Length: 458
Image (cartoon, helix red, strand yellow):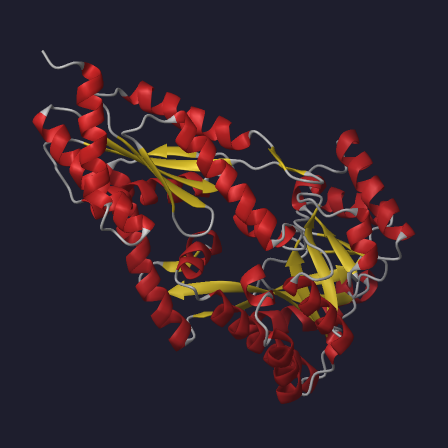
């Protein structure tokens, strides 16, 4: 009887011949998958494919030089190869993604596959030692187990693992998901939503709503934040948490940013013409937008078109985007935007990795204290200490502050007492369409009717 070693060697040789003519890592993976599927069908086994993605890869890309990043990715690939058998395969795909094909000689249970996925994550999480530092990364994993009776194509198997990965990534860092049919249905819904989103962008169905920001010292309107909202013909108002990832997958975030900027400046111009006092308007921008070489030119062109002074436009940047050194394209563009005269808000402060040095050295005018530190701040001593520390740091750096997600009068009262500069949230107002924002500003500007007069009017 032929030995198990010989069977394994012949299997590995067949796989090498299978993808020898392939030109890209994806082609090599899909061809190896098809060979594995054919072999699995003869031995009632399952074919298994993992797609692994380094968490927050764009931040890693910004932080490390090209040479260091290439070394990190190669070391991780070597680790994965070293942990697998000769008949298995690892190939790096786009960006920080790897595909892994497992060619089992027996049927693997779901528990077996979860164990392998966990091993993959642990291998990647071991720090990579560089010349002067250590790179610490984590990874999310999507996995597809292709039943022999289904016998799909290699592309279908790889796509199933990619769909599982997308679900894993949506749950946060170090996510892990195994593909099930419902995931494919959800992916199809996302694709349909993406098609609708393109049409909605073109028709103006995705537009800016405006959430007021007030000064906690004077109680006057200090600005508005422009927030993307989609009024769908059939589904009504779609949550940004649902459609923003769709736009990102479709490469439409820059187009969305341009729409938000245009809507925001048009609203500010309209309020000015109506005699309403709104000092500034804030627009969120993602890393993709801020990395674009024309971003400063685009902003200046829009400001000129609507005759708005630059100091009345605030660019909001997530703290997780604001990483890198002075040579990073995002930092260079933010400094150029600041020199233009626009203000910079650092959003979700306290949830990322921004250091005090970063706030001091880069063009930050105001930090927005994340909602997670504001909830129950009037009753929770630990929350109070965190907010006190942030406010003290901001005061020492001469940086303004805004608390976001303020939902109760008690939270407002505590923030006033603590010396926070500004606030926004449901306790003040929900995001409003531009016409309703106009009415809210007018009502907020009107002084309350004295009780003595109110009684005579009844």
